[in-house]
Structure formats: C-alpha cells, structure tokens
Image 1 (tube, rainbow, N blue to C red):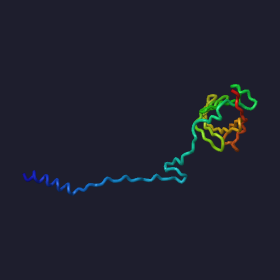
Image 2: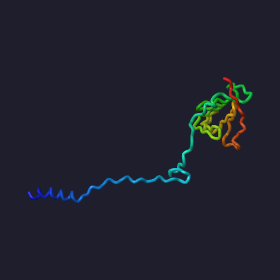
Image 3: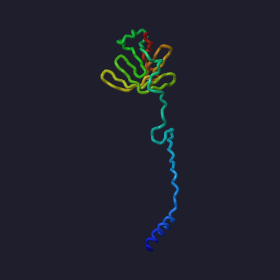
Image 4: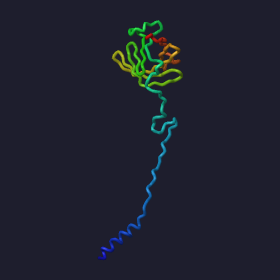
Length: 151
C-alpha cells in the first residue's frame, strides 16, 4: 500500500521540478546583398522586360521602298505580335524590350534547315521601318529601310 501511495507523490514532485518553456521565436536570417544589387544567390539584379510581343505599330507587311510586296520579294518581311517572317526564315519572339525609342526583339529563328537565335532592333520614322542589328556599330546594320505594304 505504501508503494501505491508513494507513486502519486513521486509524480507530483517530478512535475514540480519541470518548468514550462516558452516557444522559441523564429530567428530571421537576412539575405546577403551582392555589390551589384543581387540578393546573394549569384543571379544579379532582375532585368527590365516589357513583354514577349511586338507592339502593334510594327505589325503588318513591309517591303523595301519600290518593292513589289509580293511574297516572293526577298526584302519583304511580315511582322506579327509573336513572330517575324522573312523571305527564307521565320523568327519566333522570345522577348521584347523598348529602349531609346526602338524595340529590341529576341528571336528563335529557323530557315533553310537551320536554327539560331538573334536580336533585332525595330524602329519607325513615320511609316518607314528600320530593322537593324542592335550590336552593330552605331546600331545600324545598313539594312534597307522598308515601307508598309498596302492591304
């Protein structure tokens, strides 16, 4: 009987020695910042991107001044929101940004059995379209100016 009475007494004494602990607050670890403004993951700061479609002012069929606008014309180009079709190649738009009054379009191109990536700079002077290599000296590749085809 003494053992039976002693057991509850021992449990009561054991519980008195334990104190309730408050839950620990989570420790916040700041994200390191890299010198170039990145968040410490090696990626660097985000780049400004305006979308993946070419603005409507460029859409349509264009050909060199004096060109026939016929699909067989070698300088004819057809621009849509998400692709540019040239005489012997087609480019799917992968990114578009606007910079200094011109649109820079990154394209995944294919033609004549090959695929490649390229960037083009599109700019308008009234109804005259220039398509240039944005990496060319002076921003111009010397490509002919195109005019909008009727239609």
